[in-house]
Image (cartoon, rainbow, N blue to C red; front, side, top):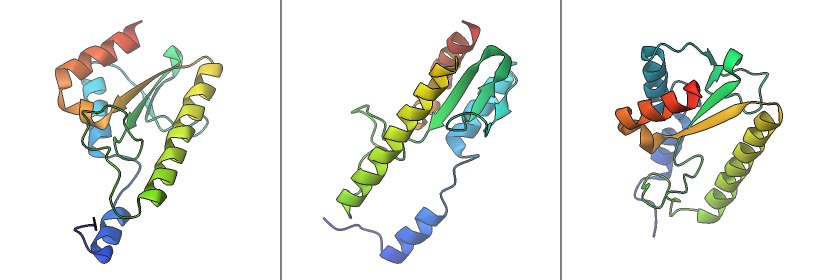
Length: 138
């Protein structure tokens, strides 16, 4: 089935996607800051440039968009592959997933602990607050 959006509109939509300061990341940042934790953003010296870095704790949080990082939860509706050019998208998104895995493994090899927060999980802030608290306090 063809895409319901014109090629021009799809191109415009895709050009507006950025890697920093997206809504899910901002939700997590505000939540973590409100909990009293302080962090650094997107440290370039660490594999994968984690979204939030807690240096003295050697912990890092990645906030992953469900589509771009292909959230594997079957209930997540955001991570569906587009119907137009599926072979292109499958290849591209698989590379993203492989890169994520390599980055997380590299951080673990350097003694870091990581947490991945998925975009769809940022809607339940109380559950997210508990998850982050458990991660940072242990």
